Length: 256
Image 1 (tube, rainbow, N blue to C red):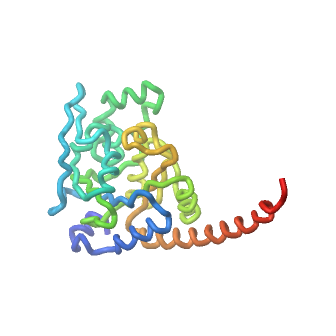
Image 2: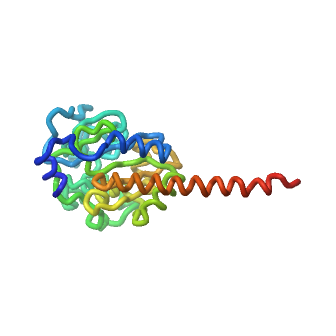
Image 3: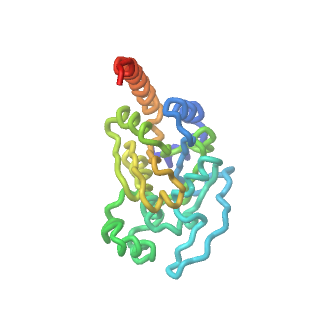
């Protein structure tokens, strides 16, 4: 059953123990930012506040949105639950494509795309090759996982190198890529795979990522087994770390 069908057939709060899974993720990975739930829907769910920041002025080619790019919603989604609609995302053409909000043919002549291609950051065929959400959503909901008002499709983590090490060991099929950072959301939703990104210059600037930060998107439907695998791996790493620390004492006791 698809996530959209699931929302239509059951109470939106029925599912995995999202608060418990969020707490376990934060604890085992020692996350500094809470896991973020991302949900795709046909329309804004009732009872979920709309994201209400003012719409930007339009560029000459018509781009405008409530934030510079969809990845900026990740920052707000760590703080509260809200629903967005396609036009809220409209300032970033690349993110609109990866989230299934616009087709590549609708944005290929947009100034932000021509700027990226002209700078040599991406090739002219990149939009066709990107992973994409296949069914155009009428709304994307963001929330702290612990407080999600609807069943999420994707759980997004902001991680550092050590945390990604644990994730990579726990999830052997983990896909690790680069730009654009937002493509990992589509990979997790559409292909059901865990996907990490080392980040991209656009997103790092827009959401204020630190130089040691990366992101990882997890398919929400698999989160119970994913968290269990992470906990097992973290326990093994802790045991190996204790061994390494004990073994190193032989060298610390030697004279210079």
